[in-house]
Amino acid sequence: MSASLYRYADGRLPNSLALAYAFGGYFAGFALLFAWHWALNLLGTLLLAHAMIVAAYLIHEFAHGTIFAEPKNNNRAGELCSWICGSCYATFQDLRRKHMRHHVDRADVITFDTKVFLKRCPGWLRKLVLAAEWAYIPAVELIMHYYVILLPFISSSDKHRANRRRVLLTLLVRGAIFGVVAAVSIKALLLYFVAWSLMIVVLRFTDAYQHTYDAFAVLEDDARIPEDKQRDRAYEQMNTYTNVVSVRWPVLDLLLLNFAYHNAHHEKPVAPWYRLRKLHHELYGDGYAQVLPMHLLFKSFHQHRLRRVLDDDYGVVESSGERRADGFYGAVGVSFLTAV
Image (cartoon, rainbow, N blue to C red):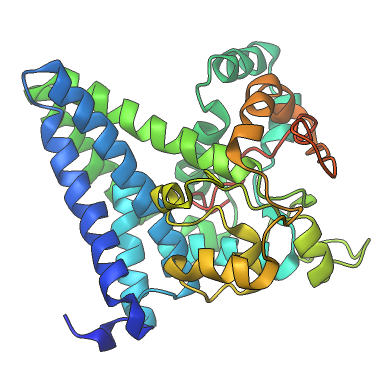
């Protein structure tokens, strides 16, 4: 494989390894779901979940064009990884456009406001969603994914209606695959959905604590957000957090392709994933106030798991202390895997 395939010469080895793991781990993990022994099933479920997590973060890299030199290759690889992650009902370019608004506007820009939807929906549905969230079932993210499927059929926009054929074909292909899997092994099908749900939970936990941005629901791609404050680079950095897996063992951040180094990513969005740890230390050194190790966030993730579903406020982060993130409620429904 020629180094010129990749955007950066030093990306040949790390990107090749990440791609091989995402695709190889996906198929190996999927195969282990059919094994006869429960230990192999468990291994397969965890491997499949993590391969999909890596594929999801590769989608993020493809969106920023940090992997391949040619945009068309980033687009093709992004589409393939979208199939792995189950986010293939929208095009990769739709996913990319939504994510780029997050960077350009320095806000959480969404099309479908789940909080408004849940406040207006029938009480039984709201209670069902809250009960699922209480049980750590990612109901809000499931609603977002289903909305992507429904949008072409309920929207009056020609742009969205044009996506009907893609959605129908994708449903047909995925439905056929799941049907074959179910015919061979119901257990394997159930374990696949467990693995996919694990991916969603990991992604939503990481996404929840990377910003205290304002969230805006806009219907069209070119709609502007309110100019009610100065959202400059200083605002961006002060409302962005680096929620590393471990300060002591930074190698663990590779499990998430260094996505946790989010301040460095926002400072230099074209920096590839394998450079982010070094870039973080070059930019901020040690003791940076925006670093929130994940062990500080578990309590908040548990304690505020219902509040964040309906509350527009993301909460606050104190300046210091082991409990400084206890009031950080976090975001929900801001995944880069949904184009709404």
